[in-house]
Image (tube, rainbow over all chains, first blue to last red; front, side, top):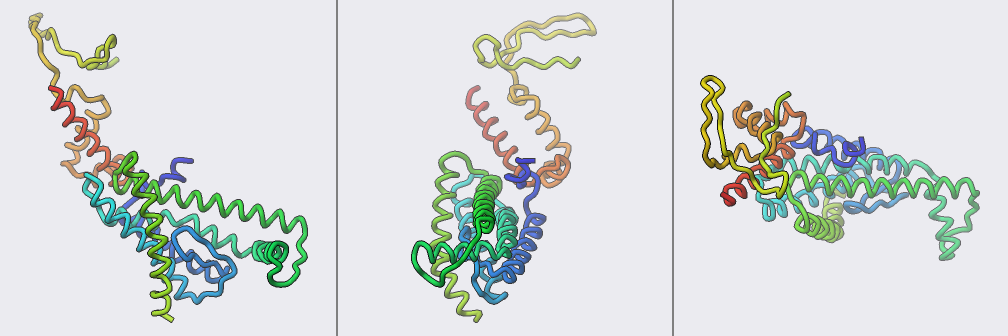
Amino acid sequence: MFKKLTNPFTYIAGKKSLLIGLLVIFATSIVAFYSNTYFPDIISVKMGVDLSLISGVTQNFLNWIVVSLLFYLAAISLSKSKIRIVDIFGTQALARIPYFFVSLISFSEVIDLYGKYLLWVYMKHGEPIEITMVQKSIAVFFLFVSLLLTIWLVTLMFNAYKVAANLKGARLIASFIVIMIISMVVLTYLSPIILSMIK
Amino acid sequence: MIKKLPIVCPSCSSGLDVISLHCDACDTTVTGKFSLPVLLRLEKKEQDFILDFVRCSGSLKIMASQLKLSYPTVRNMLDELIIKIENLDQDV
């Protein structure tokens, strides 16, 4: 069960994972729109952000396309196996499933309230916020779950790349880390340009 | 019980050679020193993989669907087997 959750790509890849993955990204975008969640890059999450539906959908698909494309380029240059583009894009799309749950968590107003509370207590920013111990506990619990979901996402992305690119050892780990960093840098600059074009 | 063909020396872990072959029909025994072919120096599951691959007409897609595994997983298994066969060829 644990293996299926952390590495479903042993059993599913190609067109099937691409189709499910695209549905996951689309569903995440819809839920994130209603829960005011924004995913500015491949792993970052911002809660309480007002963004149009089209911008949210575009950003989420852009995150997936950029990282998949970089993984594909790395795979064809580093792997000795015959790499299929559909496996890289399909498995990376399916790997984004944890963020569907993150966008659901954001429906809870407690996290937003706790964020405002922390801003007031530590930075004297905003207005004074009253928050109960129960609300604090719920917020910390949800933040912890979000952290676990992020770890799950990175694990899925790593295993997706490992299976689809057939890489091992230092070559796999080094290229994965480098691509994750490059993706975040590329998305930091590319996202505002793309989003301004569709506004 | 199906006996497993030993391919590795239990004492020093080196590859084994064949010293004698026997015909059950006429009770003839041939002795000599024969190296095991590459295919017989593979593990049983690797031999089964090759047989499955041939039975599937060399189609990884069909094989993946029969083994209920993804296409890249089966391709990775094949690629690892190719590397092992190349290494065994070099050892000969």
